Amino acid sequence: MPPGIWTGIDAIRRRTVTRVTADPGGAGVSLPPLTRPVKRSVTLDGHPTSVSLEDAFWTALQDESRRRGMTPAQLISTIDHARPPEVGLATALRLFVLAQAQLAPVRPPD
Image (cartoon, rainbow, N blue to C red; front, side, top):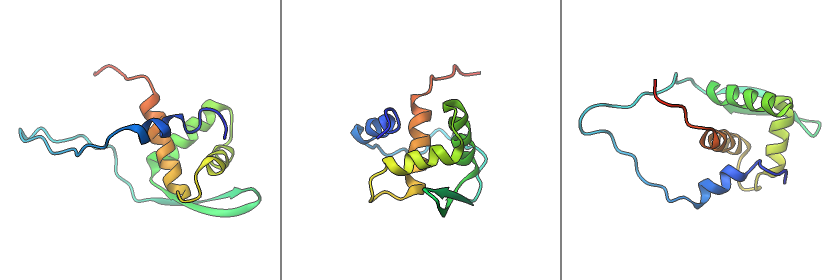
């Protein structure tokens, strides 16, 4: 497994999941633009496959692949090889993006 690919995933696995509830004061939550999953074709190890992800995840994968000096297909292939067999590719990609976001420095509020 390439170093660093699942570092964030391991950190997520060690955490206890807590339920998030709505703010009783009515402040609500701010959601990013919500899109339906988009199916894209990717060639992994010479075999075509398709993956359905929301636009935000595709954008984050493209950004992370650029940051690492890889093509998106190379990054997806690396994640595919690192994932456990019982975890689907789309799930592994989403968890990878989540882990990268959680490892990123926190921006101060505007």
